[in-house]
Image 1 (cartoon, rainbow, N blue to C red):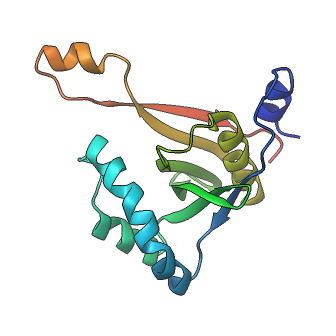
Image 2 (cartoon, rainbow, N blue to C red):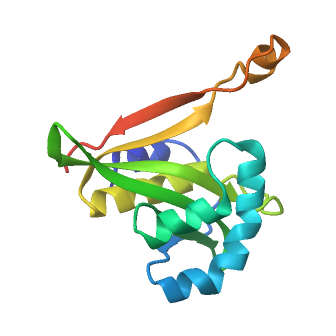
Length: 163
């Protein structure tokens, strides 16, 4: 049981459906599901146009610089996540998983944030990562935009103990 699962165990989780993340590893599987994934990418890139585009993302995945994971809730496709694993130059034995993009289909009403984070953390541990990271828009987005600023990102880090 991960530390996040332990903390979540103290909370009542009303959603008892099974969330699965499946790594789309082969190019054949990627191209089979690409039209489905691309639908979500359009929404992701509309919110974060500076992040990349579909062609760049496809190249990153095909060259194994990024992985794509499809999410299923009780066998129904609900969205995807793109993840990168890298090592720090000064500590090549430290693998870090970074969540680049996360997408949930808008018609899926379940709040799956907790379950999703547990599933990603489990995959990071299985891949011997020592840290999990992601970026998020700052809470000041509307205020800053009113002053002429464009959104920046805040990085969140979580050391994975016991790896």
